[in-house]
Length: 411
View: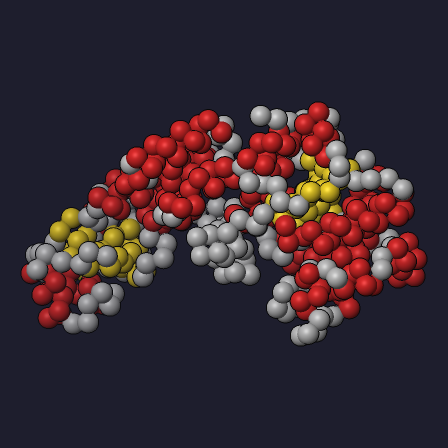
């Protein structure tokens, strides 16, 4: 299976421009680009599929360019519903640097990273209208889906002009870096075709492009910041454990698709895993493989093993098997409280609001419904001190089967 055929098999090809694009991708060494606006200081899982597609092309010998939109990010591309919030130049530059570091890590420093602000800033308004605007018909712009959908509710001139800048980006890279191919998510097809058209009109030459279908969850939602369900590639924003939990709970119906999109496993390896998973779905072989491949690629094997250990420890209640860092990851979203002195368990339960009264605390203890660091506690006279903590720092309280609380020693 050649590269283009494999991309299609993985479900990574939707729209295509250029009659001999397959030959270019399969048999030649070309320069290609994909882009993103720095609207946050980290990319997320929605970007990751595009990054991996670019990495597949790079591994085949093609030269990758990531365009980070320092110029377009100041405007914001049109959304289907409303105009994007304008961000400051300081925030944008901070975001740009964060993205640059992530891409350098994922591509082992092999991706060329460019900022479209570097060439857009040199344009004055009249020159831009003459050199770009003159070649793009307004009727053509109005026919683009994202713009057309906003006409009823209203679209600003800045948003309307966004496609001109992105179109010029392709022309600039085509002329200055011999970049002949653009690859993006399918929501960018309208902007891509502006660039293809501009290149043809300005140079008389053809360029190439393909889009990838947007990756959706089982409910049909995008993985993205605007959707409110972003899984960040920055480990400090989404821990390996959080990412593991999401992936290990992937719906069975999505596993085959995600394995094709998000891993470098061969088609034969993927289909073997899918077959094994169908025979024994309760073992979650596909989900575990997905989590292992993604987390290892992003953060390393040790992070995957740690995330897996946290998950198994919490399932079994073996809290003492975890170190303080793993405790922080595993209980990041449970209620936290401070322990400022040695305290009787009943007083601790009341003061930390785990129970509403001493009477209720005693009832929970009597009914074996309270655990401290994974061990049942029913003695109401026991004192909670540093000796009972994990690494002299944390005490994990469980009330009932599912209610966890994290106490931090502060004395």
